[in-house]
Image (cartoon, rainbow, N blue to C red; front, side, top):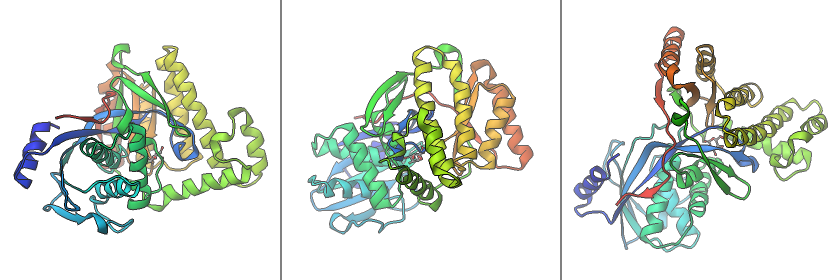
Length: 384
Ligand code: GAF
């Protein structure tokens, strides 16, 4: 998305040039799903798809919002009237960030905003986090708040949890705020410590495809919250603060303690094995054994499908078809119940695997998927 275009759009709407233009990317998660609200490990990377915001400050306590991607004119909100769960529209995300900044004591007195995005929405690629983070970064710069990237991510998560009312973890906002080009982000969600892991598949003759199934997912729907509550219940039954505290070699003992509580057994098993899969993926990448992460991705999908039960027929079809047509690995990515899958392939197999998935979808009578290559890209930044 070109900065000049968004800058020009701002000028037309508000009659003056913006003070600056910022961008924040969507993400895909390589491995580590639903571990972030269990204090566990995740490993996302930023997409080249971004949300771009042209922004200027205001001093009159008003927030004016406009998106090139949404029908309708400028939305005007009063800062002193912002209230959690009062808004069910897209404006809740940027307004929630302003609310969270002010609630944390930061003197934000208003803003004019014009946005445009190339992050597909409802595809499990964190369009909401991109929208939150671009606003947080812009206001942090313009109001000279001095907040660090991880602090901006926390405030954005608070906006999403409290203002929007979706009980998500910290992965997506941190990915959008902190990822670096050519790297995946190994994030410990307990203390937000981060390691940038070089992840350049092209140099090794591979590609990572994203397959957007076009099945829309939504986090505020009840199933995500039910999984989260179920994990918290599992931790309480096992007497730990979070499921992160169950070591992988203590899993069998923990499951034995849960007895015939089948629901808790399934959720705990997914989280504990998924944390181990993230650590194994990091070790393999560090050892230069990139192709060996394929089976780890496949095991992650099986766990999400069978234990966590958040896959859907379209996601399973992508994974099964990709593997049957020669992919090195594949799994659903993100919150689940639709959205996207990722597929690790040899560069020479991209066309074969893509065609096989498209044909399988047509054969099953599903909406045609959108397939694109994901290249680890830059995190949020100021463009001008
Ligand atoms: C969604 C949430 F927003 C994240 O916090 C994370 O829990 C993810 O689903 C699943 O790993 O993207």
